[in-house]
Image (cartoon, rainbow, N blue to C red; front, top):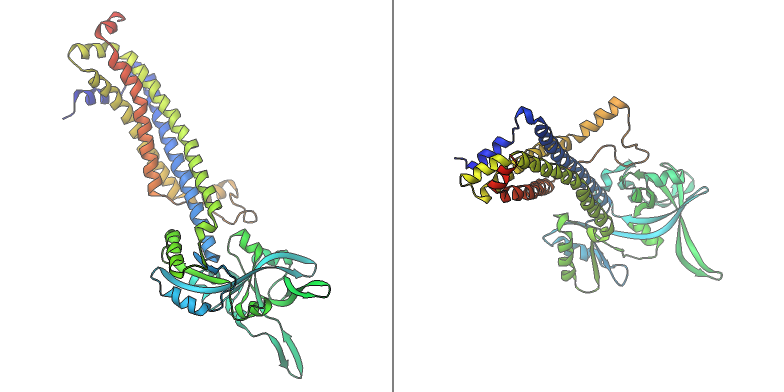
Length: 427
């Protein structure tokens, strides 16, 4: 059974016809809270989707954990891979070599990272084989050198795979030749002589990350070992783990297992600045959009102050009948909290509907108004990557309900201080 405070508070939610202004103000306050909650859910869902999309693109080309040696290249890398693959959190591993070089074709020059990979195992660690725009990673394994075709000796260049943007910058397509120049060459009579070698473009990849697509080229490990005079050594080992969200803990565990001399870095540490900026932006957006809810909360305060002024006589009668100050406070707190609750629930429903159907909504707007929200020549996405986070929704709902509760305290306290004699004096 409802207490008298709750029952009266519910009655006050519906103002009589002669007090239509209060009904309008009540509706505006509820709609304001609903708008704030909806905006918070939609914006935070989009930012969470962007973060997820960015993680997928980074992990599409880079490994979750990278093992290198402080002293330089790793010579017994096969034995190290066998050891790493036996660890319970490790799914797969693959060796790599990486160095900075210049790639030239005709009059075009680009500074890139030349990364040597093992085509047989790289697909177990990254999804680079699934983002190939043309060609195939296995073509990197094709033998190079001098071959006899008929009666002539023909030099067949080793294969190289370029990022899609890099291939456009150099103006090359599959089958064209490019020259790779390493500044760390041999010392001659006139000083350092850079190393140069021709490679044949056998494919391109499109990772969706501008940094990779413009500054990364792939070759086979044997060719890189010969080019950089590494012998049978590699730069490091890329590792795929079972849970990428636990990469820092797993990297720490592997560091302890391998002992001193080995550097074990995880993808979150390598991209700390980027993800810190995204999280900071997310917090700032939460604070900014929460101001909409605060404005609506001031509407609740104004409304309750007006209700208290209108109901002076009723408050005096209730106090004369024995109602306590706490009971009077509860009447107006119930009214404000229910208004905040209705606005919060309405906003949460609308926000979830929009966030879960954002792709369809953006497609409809593009088709109706002929807009292009994400031009493909500018952005690497063609739709809103929205992802609803249950934690974000709960935080938004709880914060809004708390703000609504706080907004009721001052008007309710003012009502509880009213004495019967003071109220009747002005009637």
